[in-house]
Image (cartoon, rainbow, N blue to C red; front, side, top):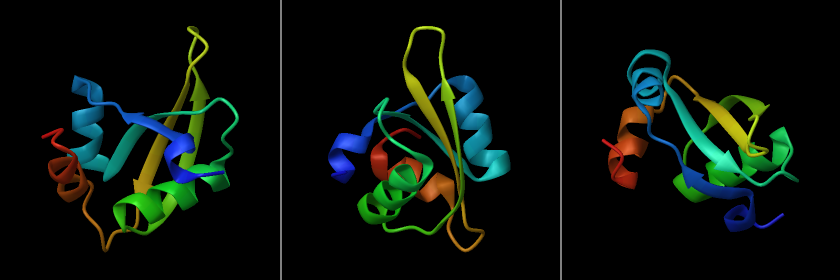
Length: 86
C-alpha cells in the first residue's frame, strides 16, 4: 500500500500528547485495510524514524487507530513538532 493511503491523519488528543511525552508513542488514524506491517513501513518512510512496535484498534465508530512506539533513538516529540501537533 502507498504510505499516503495507509496514514490518514495524526491524532492529537490530551491522552495522545501524554503518550508522546511519557511513552515515546504517536497516534494515527489509518485505513481500515492497513495491517501492522503497512503502518510500520508508512511511518518509517514518511517521517524518517525507526518504529519499534505498532498496536491497532478499531473504534466503535468504525475507524482504525494506530499506536506507534518509536525506537528509543528517535523522539516522538520531535516528530510531533514537525507535524505541528505540539
